[in-house]
Length: 281
Length: 281
Image (tube, rainbow over all chains, first blue to last red; front, side, top):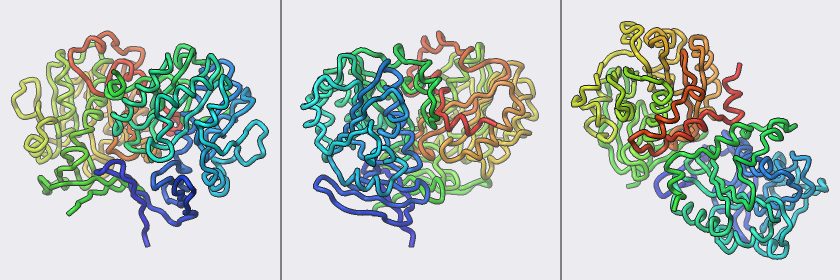
């Protein structure tokens, strides 16, 4: 029997992926979680029926949500990841030896538990054995309210602005993130597809610009996300991702990255005209 | 009745697009041609069942196969497009007032005829009314054999390396293109997806590098192409796409482009590590 998973990216277009078996399917109090084996992308995790990560292309998303900020901030020591229960962002953060502590604040313990069980290549640093990593199962808003002026970098590694993550795209949330950051802190937030989500993007960038003085969109190709064209919002109190980019530290890094590199860091901010116009008021 | 068109990008993944009606379906001596109306992408042209262009995202492919070369060559006057019977590349070329002649050499007259009939936004400059445009219905190889040392720029606007276009990816073809170019000529060839076509890309770039001294891959997001991550080979006798880029001419251009711009021109050449490694011997 051929089993194809199809995710609609709008009412009228979708991606279809051949699966070989279901590894887990269950509901937490927040959402439905599925982990399936696919032939093209390895194991794939879905939340409420939408692709979150696959083993084959997750390196793109996770390298790109982490390294641009970490190679821009001159002395990043303490990082918070909101969401990201699969552990991929934490894995990339741990490649930076100067990081003293990375906190993962994920609302849904089932995502963490099943990622450790079924996605070990992503969850390798959140299994409790790394003293530089702390896990908190909590609502991101509640957590940052209680941790003001504390982090160098905060990554908003959220799902789409529907379901449990809807509050993570509002101005009041970005204000809390701003306050949880130190005076020279940086927030990175995934900010959807310029091709399919122009209206959502307008709102995200309006909300972030109401809070942060430096806001620059950057892009990455992510084949299993809608249109393959994805974006992140570099949001910063002091450091600019191009003029403050620590090129030397990026060049001399002691780890291999399969998507990110010191040239791509710059190119990622050079946007197609329509993508820039989407977020221009 | 819901009719969904599904294109497999490999045996195990595909894109699925809702269609509302078929506008044309027929066979030429070379291939099957279909033009269908879709809800997400407007009209869509398929050759042998594969998406060639859609009205909604063709601007990306056509701007990106044309403008990087035309803003690098200092005095482009005479251009040849091999393939590209939909007319989109010619439309973009005609936005450059310094171009004296653009020749379209398309093997299949049915593609030209039905593009003029059903895709007028692409075919606007190939309907016979522009004296700066000449159409030749001919095999690209035969045409360039008879036109040596003649063109400033040649665009290889081909289908995939299967079917009638297979000869357009071989070293002997690139050698003919080299000879059909003037001493400072540039060839641009579409070069498939770094994500799905690593082996095909290795061959393409090995073949082009055997002929041209300057070969640089650049990238564009094209949502309806496999993985959404597409590439082009900038292949040149003399001019380099970064160091010889005519930034001022790009900035002062008197037309609007929706994807290409003078910053993106540079960023398009800043490749993900895995894409660069695909084509490194």
